Amino acid sequence: MGTSFDGALAGEAGPTGLVPGPGCRVVAVGAAVPAAVLANRQLTTFLSTSEEWISSRTGIEERRVAPAEMSVADLGLRAARTALGAAGLPAGAIDAVIGTSSSVDATFPSVACRIQAGLGCPPGPAFDLQAACTGMIYGIAVADAMVRAGSARRVLVVGSEIFTRVVDWRDRGTAVLFGDAAGAVVVGPATDPGSEILAARLGADGRGADALVAGAEGAGPEGTGTIPDPMSPDRPAPPRSLGRVVRMNGREVFRFSTTILERLVRELAAAAEIAPADLELVVSHQANSRILATAAGRLGLPIERFAVNVDRYGNTSTASVPLALAEAALAGRCRPGASVGLIAFGGGLTWGGILLRWGDTAVGLDDARVADRRAAAVPVGTRDGREEAGG
Ligand code: ACO
Image (cartoon, rainbow, N blue to C red; front, side, top):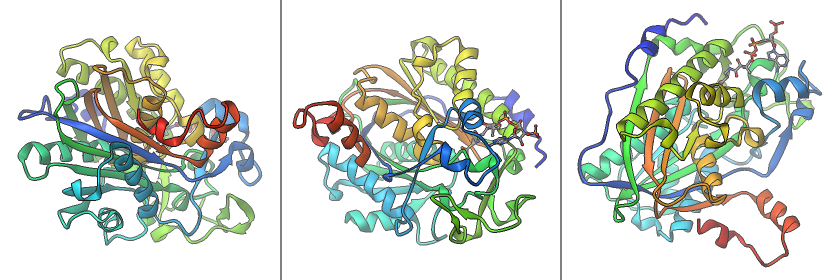
């Protein structure tokens, strides 16, 4: 997995700056996670690893695993329904659907077409785009351009991943990292001047393509013996979805990720003519807590300025930004008028950032375990999902 993408890292992140035209905003954010938890301790029963190694090198403590009968579109549909439900939007209000996933169950039909049908949206455009973990940022930027161009009024972007079906559970270098989740964002015209998509930066450097691969060609030295089912290691896992496995040059990806994350924060801030310290919240792709801490340190920002939930979900690829954003907003971390940076990086190599002025955005989270935890923590009846989803 040799890589030679240093040249791109020395240059500009991408051509997209402040987006011209009438304003656009994030109308709603929703996320959904499966209920089943796979903790680090369980991984140590079949992988040559330790809870201490995983926790200290990645910050991950546990991840979620989708049940066998759930499709990538099913999980995405849950996130989409959560976003629409939080905003009180009917499916008929969605003119176009963009799907993004690196763990699709089928090359076609697209996840977007499944979600369009599942929601009952009108027969407008529906398509998937592939930008690995950066898919959600690319999707929001494309949706923003469609709305500004007048080709759609509201665009639903859904990132859904069941990565546990493409992970090689014999490969300790990647198996400990990934989990399942979905996130959805509705992009529409800005009606409130306080709520807006201010800037988008997109980039890719295909010279780094081999650093991170989900494909049949990725089979490496670990590819001997039967892949165990992580939830029940005595049994073999089902065949990997579309025959794919993930392979990664961890050190190269780590170096790329820290460099690009720092640079995107600086570029988003510069686009809005503010200092990085004026960003009230950075919602980065959740790959590894050390990546976040390293970038925060280089930027001179406290880690508290970053949303961090990789400990509970692992790397959920294109779902990670909307999942982290939904949790942060529900926790009251997005003040109206705040500058919020969304940033992702991943296979391709790809990267992207969106700068939001936070405003009247509806937020929801579909996680049966949150209700469980809250029921234990507060008197029953003082909180419910609807109240929490009001964000
Ligand atoms: N348990 C125990 N030991 C392990 C494990 C494990 N799970 N995985 C690797 N090791 C070993 C290696 O074999 C190596 O052993 P050796 O020295 O005997 O050869 C040693 O640990 C160090 O390996 P490194 O790869 O150098 O470990 P590093 O500190 O770099 O951590 C990690 C590895 C966590 C993967 C890190 O490189 C990383 O986070 N990279 C970025 C990962 C990432 O973010 N990927 C996705 C981003 S893009 C996307 O989301 C699609």
